[in-house]
Each structure stands twice: as structure tokens, then as C-alpha cells.
Length: 587
Image 1 (cartoon, rainbow, N blue to C red):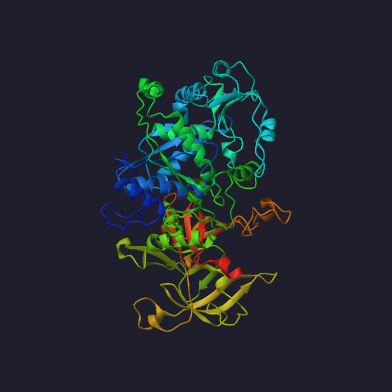
Image 2: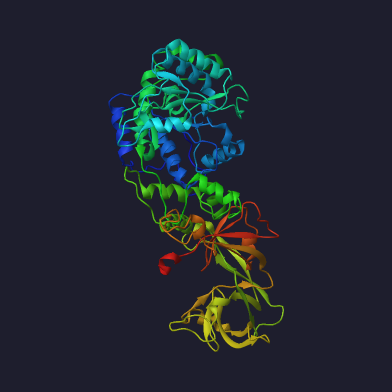
């Protein structure tokens, strides 16, 4: 099956006609199809299951699956599980979940381990052709022999072993006779090449480690460049899309595909045929594009792992993390990430995107479709003294000011309200438009209130305001449209539901937390204000939200019901993003 449409409400309807996207990759695909090079487009998304996917992977996912869908082709999900020491089924499940959440599905689910027998037969073919040899150099010696960018490397003393000896040693490697690290199978290419990747790279190494799919069957595992190129060829991938760091690997990719020549050596595919695994055996074309880089982030899988392992964040799905799981829990939508990828575009030029572009994509998505609710995160009580004790009524509010289809809701109103503490000032700054002693302000949808009295505790802290609600300013009354400078939101103290509100912000305080030129590491740039948890109050219609349901809390920002911790009787909301870019103000 080809990549599916998203179930995300922000996704366009399936019959919508969108303008054709233009970038250099899509142009290549169009030209290849027009020239008759391919009957259909096939792509793949090939993550290694050694960690959770991060926001940088969203670009690759959208491109791999998007290209296939746009051109009526198909995209496989293939796990590059050639390094069993670092791989885990937990990561496999999370990756599958992430791809589906972003709105895509795969034509076939494959694993590099599905092809281990083919890789092994291909390696024997290279040996017989004189294109590979078994090398006894240690990893340190290999580095010494490789040379530098300005000096050619030296041939391994084992490079001229005969075919029979190489086959014997390689088969004994396969049989598990040798210890880890004692031998490798290396390609025989050119130790004087200006491209370091072509200086007799390793194709196989010994790792007597159990594999999640194959158990103890293999004491040797193929290297990524070897397995990836052949995996693409086996699956008939037409366009192998990679980030720019693989550009220097492309000559090796092509060398492996050409020298093994699966299409011309169908007997190598016999193990797959015997297992009923479909294979196409075509020659793929690798194309590189710039990765998604965003300031105020780290996207190194190693560093993300360290953040989790060292307890600097609360797990892989901590809403401050830049993993897709973390972003989802923070309240980022699949539609907003797809919008981000569209806005960033596809190019060969590495650049760093400002974090505000990411936040802007979420604001634009949620502004269009997130229902509005009222909530107070720093409550201050306001008593309307001219309303009787026990007064209660309901007011009708629109769920969305720009979308009548979302309908209306009933909001309770009473004598005692919670308002935001920051909406009152005893000594107001210049230009203040909210509540002051003796001043008036409009209560959103309820009328105009005047502050008559400020109640303080023994320490001088304000604990309560008392005021008068102008009866002529109530909805439907003649004075409802009386001009007033400020409008504030509120919730009924008698009806509001107490909620935990988690106020998340950027995890790092500097644009380049990876920059160690100052002698500091990314750990030194963690934002101490990246997470604050406060007790607030939300209107009843917010408390009954389903997990992962997003709202705009009026005047506060966009919030989402936590996907794990939220319940109607104990609401938990995460701030996804503020209404405006507060970091631009700080700068």
C-alpha cells in the first residue's frame, strides 16, 4: 500500500488539489519518470532502532513518504538493525508509532536483518571477484594505515591474500571461530583515494552479540554502507534520499551496488525467494539533501541519550525533548511538523532554522482549529459584592471565534471568580489597561467590573479583590458595549476544576548549545525555567478533555491535555507554546 493520508484534522481532504511542490529532488524524480527510467517510484525510510526519533527525522519521514505518495509510488519502512548492541524493540515500537502519528504508513515493513543471508552471499561474491579481503589489522592499526586528507593511505599487509584463503577465513568468521575485533572483511578499492570512504572500507565485522530478530545465528554483521546499499537494491528503491553527510559515501554506495550487481546475479536473492520475500533487485539512485537544524536544540542521538541517562530530563518523551515522542506530548501536532517541513523546504544548503519557525508552525495550526477555553494559572480571587451569595448562572461562549462549525458551550459564572494575578496592579506601569484599585475592566463575556477593595494578609500580600459588577454592562444590556480599555478572562471559583498546569519552555538558553568553543558543554546551557508546574483552575469544559486534546487557553497560550497523566477528575495540561514569541522580546 502507498503512504496513507493523515487522520490529523489539519490534514487537507483527500480530494484537495494542492499545487505541485517544487524542489531539486522532485525535479529529479519528474525527469527520471519522464525519461522512462522507472515504472514507479519507490523510496524507503531506514532508521536504526537505537533511540527515539527526533524532530530532524520528521523532515526525512515527510520527504521519503511524501515523494512516494505524490508520484503514486510506495515507501518502505526498513529498520537498519545491523548493530544489535545498541538496538531495542522499545525503539522499534516508538518509531512505528511516530511514523503513523505523522500521518504516514509504509508499503512494506522490512529489516536489514531480513537480508543477512543475501549480504553474506554478496560478500563471498566480492571475495571471489577479488574485490574484498579479510584483514587482520586492529581498529587502531586500520586508522594508522588509512592516512589523512593530505596523505594517501597504505595497503594492509593482508590485502593480497588469495581468494581461497579469504573465503576460508570469511567462512570461519561466519562460523564464530574468531573473537570480536580480530578480523574484518574489507573492500579492495583504493588506499590513495581522495575520498576516505573508498580507502578499503570495512564491509563486515565480528560481533558475537545476540540479535533481536535473528538470535545467535550470526556472529558477524555487515557495516552500514554495505547493508544499506544492498537493502535499497533488493527493495527496488528508485530514489534513496539521504542527508548531506552521506554525500561522500555515495561513491561507496554506487561501488557496492555495481560490484555486487544483484539484478545480474539473481541466485544471490534465492534466500529471499525461498522465504517468500518480494524483491526487485534494481539500481537505486542516492540523492542528498540538507538536514533539519534548529537553534536552541541538540539533535545528536548520543546527547539526547545522555540527557535521559543523566536524569537531566524526565525520559525520552519529556515535553522539553526534541524527540517526536516528546514534541507530541508537549502538544505539537503532526500537521504542525508537516507545515514546518514545507516551510523549511528542501535544498542542498545546510542552514540553521530559528526556533520561532517551529513555534510559528504550531501556532498557525492550532490558531485555526484549537477550541478556546478559559483557565487561570496564577489565581487571585475576585468577589463581586453586588451579586448575592450563591449566585450562579451560565453564559454562552463560542468555541472558536473564526469557526462557527465548532459551536458553542455553556460556561458557569458566579459571585466569586478566579482571575490572573498579573491582571491586577496596585501601582500600574505606564500604559496599563487591566485592573487597578478604583478602576474598571471588562470580564470576558460577563460585564464590566470595578475594583472597590484590596484585601491583604498580615504580610502585605494581596489575597483577594472585591468589586462591583455593572448590571447595565451584562450581555444583552444597553451598556454591554460601553467603551472600556481592558478585557480579562476568568473562571468561576465555585465551578472551576483545579488542574496541574505544566509551563514548558525551551530546554536551552543559548542558540548553539552544541558549541563547545567557550569550554562549556550543552549541559551548562540548560534552561532552569524550562519546566514549572503550578496549580491553576480551568473551566469545566476544559477538564473533560480527552488526552492529547489541544486548546487555546485565552490570553495564555496553547495547551494540551497530557497524554499520560490527564484525567477529568485530575486534569493535567502542558503548555505547548505561548501566544507570542516571548524569546524575540528577550533578545
